Amino acid sequence: MSNLTLSIKQQYFDEIKIGTKTIETRDLKPKNNKKYLLHDENDNVLISEDGIILTRSYKTITFLTGAYKGTRPKMVVEVVSSEVVLFEDEKGELILLKDENQEEYYASVIEYKLGKVLNV
Image 1 (cartoon, rainbow, N blue to C red):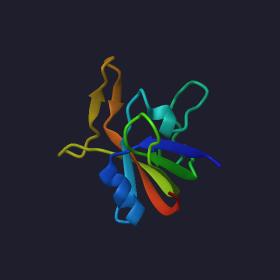
Image 2 (cartoon, rainbow, N blue to C red):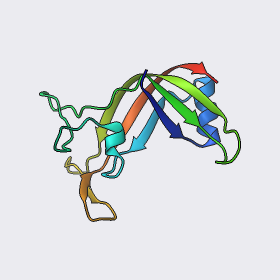
Image 3 (cartoon, one colour):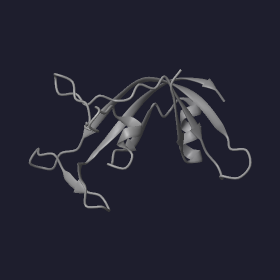
């Protein structure tokens, strides 16, 4: 089973646990997009024939919170779906940004729709 591990703040951990937070988002940047998106052998992001950016398939997310020393509270949550959301400016054009290395990328996030809490 494929699992993604993410750190989150206690407030969001608690909201997921009781079911009031059902979407988890992460910014997509050049330094982290391999963790979230599918790539070809040339490191290009894969896009479907109908223009949808293909995400890595994770069945679960393990959320961790708390300090990095000792035992951290964690829970495993089912992933129902994932999709990339691209941000547009007021003219409806995609927003282009640059990272600390001046590498260009589009302003976007990956959204995970969360299902059942499987283990706390």
